[in-house]
Image 1 (cartoon, rainbow, N blue to C red):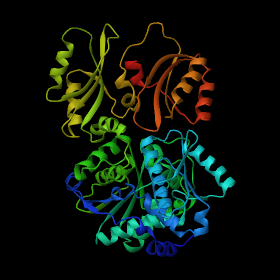
Image 2 (image 1 turned 30 degrees about the vertical axis):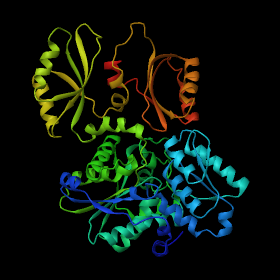
Image 3 (image 1 turned 135 degrees about the vertical axis):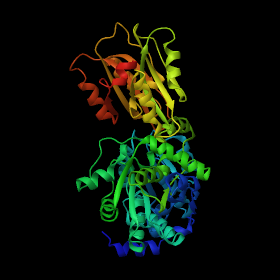
Image 4 (image 1 turned 120 degrees about the horizontal axis):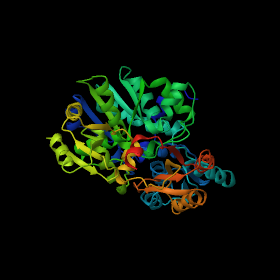
Length: 503
C-alpha cells in the first residue's frame, strides 16, 4: 500500500510519454451553452489506441525488467485495456497474450491482433476469461498486467490529472469515469494534492455501480450482475487499492442511466464531431445531471472523453434513446375508444406535439391502447402535454422510464391469445457469442412452452431477450437456477403494466 506522496512521485516520473501523447483539453461550446458553465473535455480519444488505457498499461510494462518481459505478458480484457497492453508489448518486443471472453466483438479483437498480440477466446464472461488467464499464469509463469488495481497502472492514468492542472489554471469541478477505479484514483491523487478546492465527482452507470455501492457499504462489494451498455466500465468488483483511494479522495459519486449516456454521446458529437463509446460519454452524462440537480452555473467544469472504441452496430440503439435522455421525448401508453374517428380526434388533441413513434394492434372491442412516442420541444413541456391530455379525458401512462417498454415492447405491440395460460414473462441478458441463443433456446424449449419471444441485436457483447414461458405455479425454480449458473441476468416482468397493456 503506497502513500499519496509515493503515488505523486510515480506520476511525476512515469514513462507514459514514450507512447502516449499530451491530449487536448477542448472547450465545448454547445455543452457550455446547455449547462451554463464553462465546460472542457479531456480528449483521451486522441491516443494511439483511442483511449486512456495506453497510459497505465505502458507505464506498468515499462517498469518491468527485461527478464520479466521475456516471460511474456498476459492481460484479461474485452476492449481498451487489451489494446493498451498489446501496443506496449509490441513496443517492448515481448510476447503478449490477451484473454477475451467468447462474446468479444471482432472490432475489439482485430486491433489487438494488429499490434501482434495473441488473442485467446475463453468463457462467456470476463470473469471466466480471468479464471482461464490465472491457469495460464500458473502454467507458463506469465506476468499479469491488471487493468486497474496496480500502483503503476494507477500512476499512469494519473498523468491525465497532471496534464489537466497544467492546461487549466483554475477549475471548480472534475468529473471522473469509474469502472474498476484506476483512472479515477490516479487523477484524484494528483488533482486533490495540487488543486485541493476542486470538487472531484465520480460517475458510474446505475447498472454498474460497484464503487458507489462499495463506498456506501464501507467495504468492497461484488455486484450480482452489471449492465453491459457502457462495457468499458461494466465491472462487478472494484480493486482493493482503487477502492481505498477513491473512498479517501472523491467528494461524491453520481449514477446515470443508459438514456443519459446516449444523450451525452450526442452532446460530445455536437462539440467535437467524434462518436465516443458509452464509457467515454459517462462523465458528460454525470456532469449534466450534477450541475442541473445542484443548480450550478458559471463554473469551470472538466470531463474526460476516456475512449472512442465504439462498435458501429450500436449507433442505432444510441440514436433510439437520445431524445429520451435529453427529455425531448416521452413514451406513453394511451387509451382511446375502439371506434371510428377516435384516432383522428386524439391527434387533434395532441395539437402542436409531434408523434415520433406509433404502435397499435387491435385487442379489445371497447378500447384501443396505443404505444406512442411524443416529441416535446423543451423538458418543461412534458407537464403541459400531460395537463392537456388529462383535461380532455384521455387515460394515459408515462412509460418513458420503463426499460421493458424501451428495449422490447415498442418493437412487438400485439395482443394476447385466447388460448394462453400460465404465461410468465422474463427479461434476460446472455453472452452474445456464436451459438449462445441456440443453447438458450435448447434448454428453455425443452422444459417449458415458449409463448412469446423477442430478440434484437444491439451491437453489444450481450444478447437481450424477452421471453414468455408457460410455467405452472412454482415450477420456475430450474429457470432461475439456470440463469444464475450460466451468468445470465434474469428479471421477471410478469407484473409489468406495459406487458399487461400491450402483450
